[in-house]
Length: 443
Ligand SMILES: Nc1ccn([C@H]2C[C@H](O)[C@@H](COP(=O)(O)OP(=O)(O)OP(=O)(O)O)O2)c(=O)n1
Ligand SMILES: [Mn+2]
Image 1 (cartoon, rainbow, N blue to C red):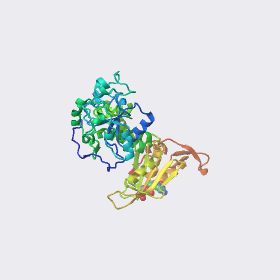
Image 2 (cartoon, rainbow, N blue to C red):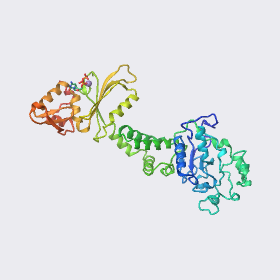
Image 3 (cartoon, rainbow, N blue to C red):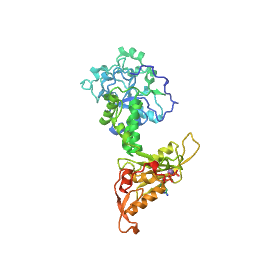
């Protein structure tokens, strides 16, 4: 539970306080579906969440966990549906507010006071339990039966008469003493919300990034990012996976992942993806041969799953440009469609250095990687020799593979399918050569 007054710099919004992105940031709400069209409800809910609000289900068990929550409903009668007041009962700032408040906030671009939009309700279980025959959702609660308890602070100062028809006079004083507009807004606006759930949201965000940057699965990436954002906005700490079931838009498989993070402190799926993804990267050329100086950087990349290398170069280059490592060139890509090799040829610079360096990044499919490694490790003299040797043996050797020549050697025609080699050792073996370590390839 968030102790009252433990948060610093909470502000009371005023009409000049224009908020946009985080308009509903830190606001926990339960939307009561009764008495409003599903479409309208969905529009409000989407806008509310997009602007930072968190929607909980009516079944949310928040006993002792939150100090501020609003119940949004079309009208007072709708409040009788589906709210478990036992579970919300210890929330000191529980407000019942018309949907119109959301609409007006959106129109105004500011977080408006609840005051003009407050609904009267009772948490008395005898009156508001869903199966209570005394409540009629169509005609609304009978006025003489509805009253407010101090814990349910819904009546604003100076507005006591407005509710006089439905509020038991005897309880009025208690209510007004405890409830002021200030307390209602106390927890809503926060300049710097503590990171209650970063330990859960961080691994989910990492998953989102891997899905987007490495696996090009934007849909999954978005799903994880959305859930991580929802958790970041919560003004309380999630202690059990059961609690996230009550947050709108978090499905069973996500609940399972959150449960795993809470129980084990990590996420096996993330661990596996990290272990298998950004691919296999080797710096080739003179660097790999161990030369003291290098003319450029030759990066060779593949992905072990055989297909995730596709589209990787674009995403990688974008990231490295964003990191200001790669210097954008006017036309940096050359794509060899026939052989499915992606090449970036450009310039790079580390932030702390003044010198720029030439860099080539080449991405190969897994089945060609061993041949590419041999070729781009070089040196060029060795390459010419082994190409010549391969030709004499009836093959054509390139960075793409080892192809059996067809017809007579002069035509240069070769099979389209390479002899499979997974490692450089195998390439040299197929050519009948002993394997030279990279540093032994300076011919
Ligand atoms: N005409 C060429 C050019 C290159 N290569 C192969 C062998 C090279 O070792 C490798 C990388 O090319 P580089 O031009 O980057 O050469 P190095 O990395 O060997 O040397 P440097 O330090 O000059 O970059 O590609 C080749 O076989 N024939
Ligand atoms: Mn080089």
